[in-house]
Amino acid sequence: MKSLDEILQNNITGMYYGNRVLLPFHFTALKIVIEKDIITDFSIREKGAYVNEHPDFTEIYFIDYPVLEANISKYENIKMIIVEKGKDIFDFSTHRKIAIRPEGNHILSIKEIDENTIFIE
Amino acid sequence: MINKNLAFLIILVINVVFIPIDSYASDESLIDTSALTLSSISNQQVEEHPMPDIFMVIPFITLLLMIATGPLFYHKFWEKHYPKIAILLGLITVGYYLIVLHDTHTPLHTLDEYISFIALLGSLFVASGGILIKIDRKSTPMLNSVLFLFGAVIANIIGTTGASMLLIRPFLKLNKDRIKPYHIIFFIFIVSNIGGALTPIGDPPLFLGFLKGVEFFWVIGHVWYIWLPTVITIISIFYFIDSRNMPDAASEIKYSNKIEFKGIRSVFFLAIIIVSVFIDPAVIDWVPSFDPLPIGIREIIMLSIIFIAYKSAPPEILAANEFDFEPIKEVAYLFVGIFATMMPALQIIANESNIYGQSLTPGIFYWATGSLSAFLDNAPTYLNFLSAAMGKFNFDINIPDQVLQFELAHPIYLSAVSVAAVFFGAMTYIGNGPNFMVKSISERAGIRMPSFFGFLFKYAVPVLLPIFTLVWLVFYFGKV
Image (tube, rainbow over all chains, first blue to last red; front, top):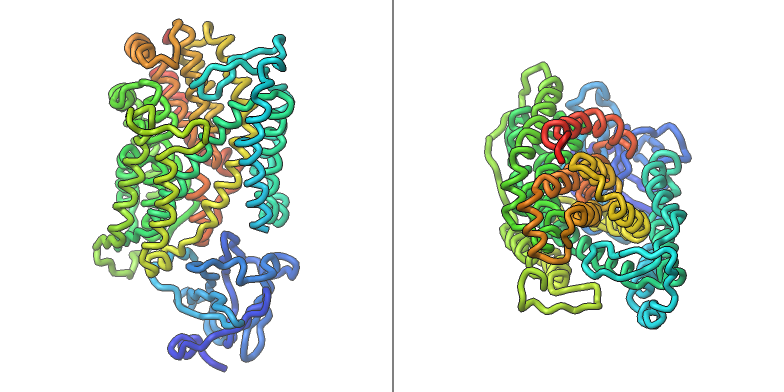
């Protein structure tokens, strides 16, 4: 299993198909902002985003956005607060802010959100 | 979906621009003399048209109710279909004017106002998207209060929209570690609305007054002593609330206390937009008018700036601001519906205020202008009530000399209408254009904003209404 730091350092990308996003590491999602939808409830499969954790990757289904490419514009990102598997979820210092965006050809870029981007936990 | 909505929008514009040309000739013969009114939204051209039926306010009320309830109760449906709903309701009203009333002037004039509105808002939105301001300081109630005061002052130089678009992102970044919805709501109260009550650039109603003949510096001379205590009171309430929201533990974050500014080219575009506001045939003689086309040189400049500013902005700044056209698209769609559907409401109000104008006091003008400006566009509301106030003293709003005489002889009426039109825009998300955009930008930054009713009843009514009542008691109550 890759760590988030490894992924960021090596520019490893994820994948997307329609509304399904696959990220190559195991994490727990705490908050996702897509467009102006703020999703914190991951308990219902019919609403917002459904997260499916696997040992080596994590997949997210964005229920209300059937074609992600069509919804995320040139300078926009899907922003997430996540905690890597194995880290203490209750320790706020382990919460990481990442931005993902569909780049075309099913490639999903993964970046850490820098201080310039406004994303409130 | 967007293409379908655009097609709807184009149909709406074509309806307004082209259908009237055929039907105009028959206007006079079809006037129902039993229900005549002087019905120009802006009173720029006084033409006789039948009054709209009272039931024609239903599309407007429907749209308002859907804006209020959609995001709460049928979020998914609303998010997907709001452009179609806004345009459809607008088309119903425009169709009624063209086919039933044979009134071409009102929809055309409304389209003219809408294009001016969206050109200004859109150009300021895009130009400010190319500016990156970083304030690396600790967020404190005092610093936030100073920023609000600064925003209130510059709102009179670059407009409430310009000030909101310029300052909202740095304000969010400054407060990122402890931000709550009330921060944004007080920003909307002060920077997006009340701050801009001092000059004709501040808020559209005052600019319309200026176009009609109100002297440029009249507002600041007669409103500053109302503006200052109001702004200070609201900032003081904010300071009190914000002081209680400070984290107990000392923060370990180190701040450089630097303020970084990038995007000087976009500042130049902002300056052009502000200057172009005055490029109007009513202000400068040599500026050509393209009447009856609902567009002028000013709008052409502003729409060009949208394109040029976007294309020339550094990509790294656009990326840092996560620039996206969606917030302005949302405003454009919702307000095309609001502008179109509110025509009957505004005409009925204009008619009623002309009838009852004689018995209205400055206090009543204040409350009537204010309560309607909270839900309708405050610019035509201002003009309708100013017209009624002038009519009370046998002055005509369409004669600049009489506007000048009126401002000298009865300043309290002009003050009441001006203050109420600007201040009450802060009461709801739809009270003023920037309110919605500030909300949208904040939501994209991950801040869950209150609903339409939450904003109104949890914040605007408890905070603003007592202050506005005090303003009325001190400055307008019992005055004739």
